[in-house]
Length: 116
Length: 112
Image 1 (cartoon, rainbow over the protein chains, first blue to last red):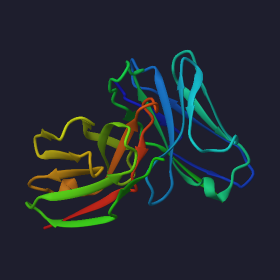
Image 2 (cartoon, each protein chain N blue to C red):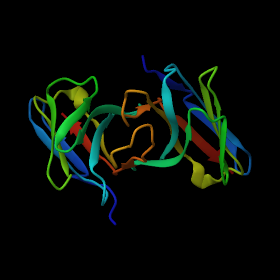
Image 3 (cartoon, rainbow over the protein chains, first blue to last red):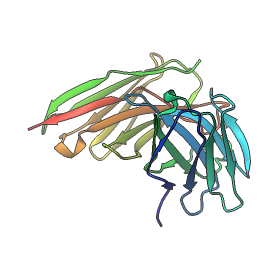
Image 4 (cartoon, helix red, strand yellow):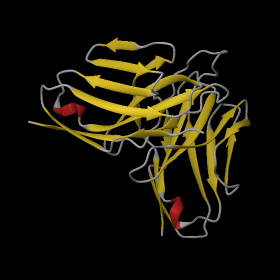
């Protein structure tokens, strides 16, 4: 089991461009969440996908969008990139939790995005 | 609202115990977690505690939860150089699904 895999590992983009990041969840997992981790900060929740629908969203603008495919893999798209979008983007996969239960989130290694 | 705070830096000698602290504001927390992040790597779950528990021990790790004071701590016994990393506390809360709210992280440096 390869765990959660993300691609690419590093990326450099210019202001105003668009970027797509990809995530393959751990085998058997059906829920994918995306987080943004700026340098020196803790990860911030962007959104979560389950059954190909965005189920929850954090405090991020509409420039951030995503998609989940039938095989549970996911993409994060960011339009009109700003310098402030430079960060490590982390994908986490998990199983849909039952009522009140806990489900461990497994994180990928992340994609380091630099906007110049 | 959700706010999780940690001290930024902790330095200990190899073999000593480390205690990393975290405070949170959301009284509807369901689970509280400790994650480890090594340079250039993703997040590794170390342990977690259900919000109605006071303590959980897992080998060298001890988690203490004071729900009244909204204070969480992670004690690492016999700290080793391989424990040097950034440690994040995180919480999930009622109505939040399994969305994680992270603290700012504590950088642990273990010296010989």
